[in-house]
Each structure stands twice: as C-alpha cells, then as structure tokens.
Length: 428
Image (cartoon, rainbow, N blue to C red; front, side, top):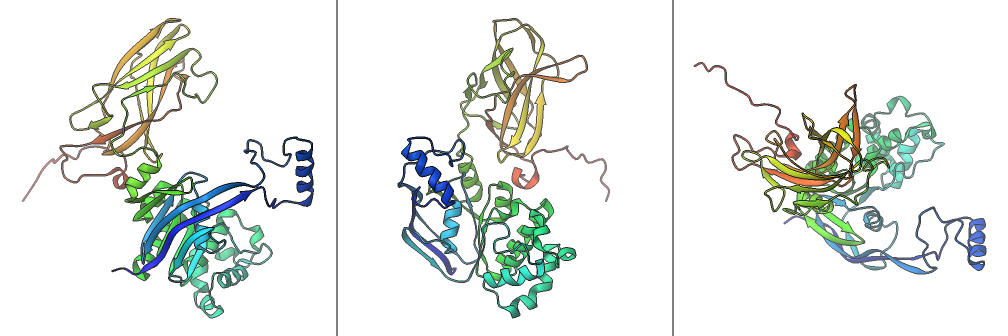
C-alpha cells in the first residue's frame, strides 16, 4: 500500500472582504470619505463587485482528499475556484479557517514566478537565497549548483542581476531551483505558462522523472489541459471553493470544460448568441443549428457523415452565400476547417432559409471536438467576407465501431488521419 503524503479533511478558508484594505493610508482615507458621502469607492477596480464591509467570502468550503506517494495530481478549475488558495494552505503560507491539513515530508512550492528572488542580486546569488528559503542547506546547493544552472539554460547570465532577466528567464531559474530540491512534495501553480514550449516540455519531463524515480508527489495547477494530460495521472476539479470531481484525467478535463460524457445536444438556438464584431449578423443572421437524424451529436466515422441544418434570416440581398465550420479539439487546439466548395444560395431581404448540409469526418481521429460556424461569401479577389459568426462553440464526438489496427486517440495521435498506407509489393 502506497504511503500517504497529504491528507486534507474538510478544509475551509473564509475571508472578510474589506476588513483590511491592504493599500495605502491615502487610499483608505479616500475610501472612507467616499463612504461618508455615499459615493462609489474610488479605489475599486473598474467592473469589480462592490462588496459590503465585512461581507464573508468562502474561498474554500469543505474540501477533502488524499494524495499518496509518487502521485501526480492536477488541480483545475475556473478563475476564482479556489486552486491557488488551496496550494497556499498546503504550503502553510496561510492557515485554514476550519479543517486539517496533514503533510508527510518536505514541501517545495512555486506559487508565483520568481518567488523569493531579489532583483538586485545575481542569478547565482538568488539560487543560494531561494534554495535556502525552500529548505536547502548551503552544502546541498553547492553540490547541485551546476545542475541547477545547466537545467535553467541561463548560464550566460547567471552572474547578472535578475532585475535584467525576462519573465521567462525568471521562471526557468526559479523552477530549476525547486526541481532540484530534495523535497517529497512539489507544488506548482501555473508557473510554466511563462516559459517557452521547449522548456515547458523539459520541465514536464523532469517532474515526471522525479516522480517515477524518486517517488516525489506533485500537485500541479494549470489552465493548459495539454500539460495536465502530459504530466498528471489524476485530476481534481474545483468550483466555487468545492471539490466537484476527483478521478480520471480525461473525465476530469471534460467535466471542467462543462461537457460531461455523452452530453452532446443536437439542436441550438443561435439568434441571440454574441457575435465577435458589430457588423456580423446585420445582413444575414444564423437563427438555428441542428444535427440531423441524431438525438446526440455522436458520429461513427466509419459509416456516418456529419449531417446538419442551418437556418438563417436574411436582412439584405446577398449573392453566393457559403458556410464554414472552424473545428477545434475539445481542449482548444485548432484542428482545421470544413467549408462549402460551392455557393449555397443567393439571399433576398427579409426571407428565411433552411440549408441542409453534410460533411465527411472519416479523417478525424476518435475524440471530442467543437466548432464555430461562419457564414460568408467571396469578393472579386476571392477574399473571405464574413457576414455572421456566432461565438457559441458546438460540440460533437467521433467514434469508430470498425477500427483497423490500433485504436488512435486524439490526445496521443493528433486529430487527423492524414492518409492511408497502401501495400505496393510484398516479397519473401
């Protein structure tokens, strides 16, 4: 049985909004003056909610889970879900209002880029200082300093004050220190979002390696679902301070994206959906979209085509109307597009049209996708003229009941089967 490294029991964290300003004396006096005069708070950010003095806010509300040695757990959720608060509690930066957090080992945490770095010190000096903050002795740092510098890829600038570093260089050096700390639990909060793609992959490989070889436990917060997939073997989803899912990575990601398994509606009202630009929907407007002959938008690629109806309301006389579907994977990666090769119709002002279409999806690898619809025409130079473009992303799923060879998955093999391989000759 694996050793228990972290146990969180019914943890709650409550804040009293507005009790402590955390700003300057001048701001506090301005706020007080505005309150006396019954005016709006002049220091509040534009669009921010005006909370009452002393109003309580539950950042976490009864969260419980356990993490075993060597587990790599992703924590995901929308902004304000409580992810960073949870990591700060585990790191003991702040204490829970209620509940208990039990740790079994030393914790290395990176909750912000360059935490503990002093801008006037050089990179090398900051390695020693940051290592000491994270619990490393000078002998440990001396032994690992070359490995830390090499991994960070900033050796050329290691004796330069870090105030001259870019944010990417900051995170490279900070992550390198944390990765080489002999800790049992590593906590990361969105820090890899700053680094370049090659360094992100290098960090993910490093975390995976130390987890497998050293049994290090990892808690990783990110909005990048691909890094969650690449690193984690379990996902916890938070929403409004509560745990709403704990389990398989793919199921957790689908839950987070708001699309539970097998929930793919077949009909959408698009008339009142937002448009990216004011001119879209003015001359012609999509009113409805429907997947045909389906109760749910799940398609067998080996024997079905994607058949659908688009209903539009014309507000002007337009020629050669076409439609385009811009397709993404369910985690947001662009896959490609499908468009009409020929014009669908010419529209007349104040008329409604129902257009029935079909598309070949046999090249798509099994998985979950979504698309945005664009109604357009072409000008004399073959340039794209968009007339309507609802922002709603419509999900659908692709399965294959007659797979040949391996059964590829979108998360491992990409999204498209590029072509078939044909045997030309076989000799013995």
